[in-house]
Length: 275
Image 1: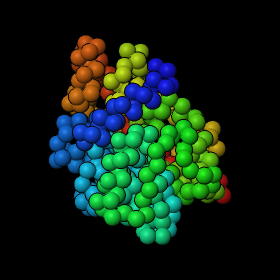
Image 2: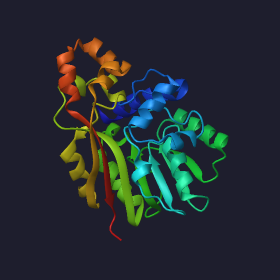
Image 3: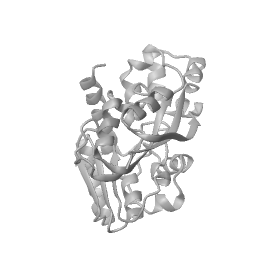
Image 4: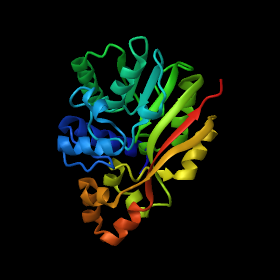
């Protein structure tokens, strides 16, 4: 798919999610149950305390990790969240940086921005702001934030090189990058790469792991390292309605699904902009 078509597909898919409030992106299983969303969220690193501390409706189960837990946020820092969705990680970050800090959430889907702003009002978050924009052209000034986080979003971008160059631009000298994302251990078959449903399910846009790390280094980051790597459980593929739709549409046997799942991992990556 062409870049603009990819963005259109992703925007429309996440607009639907914002309206109906059920997850889609692996490793969530998309069944829409609040209990299931919470269970999946705890499985990827969120604590009960964190999930209880945010406004209801801010956790749509769209992540593949908990970047806030490893971002070492300090009071007073300015944090930018790429692909902020309904605001979960922004609200968790806001609790860490305090009143003197500031959180900026960026999302390209108007419906998500509206939902996040509604959640911020519900939770009376004064230090959180949501901006409509694309992560390839971040609506923030040069050298303006201390930390950039992102959770299972950069893999959706058709131009990841541009995204990390933009992240480098907006970070202050000494600023930190902390992302959770889906990457590949080997190339996906063409029928998955070209599937619209797989794009919404965060698979088609995923990049080979080592290439992903090289792109971050190429953008200028130092101290780039993977701090955690998890396999992609086969049950997420077999239970996820998005994955089931792909399998049904393309008539994929379970053996191929198992092979596909073994190619996909979630990672947490960090890097730093030199002081």
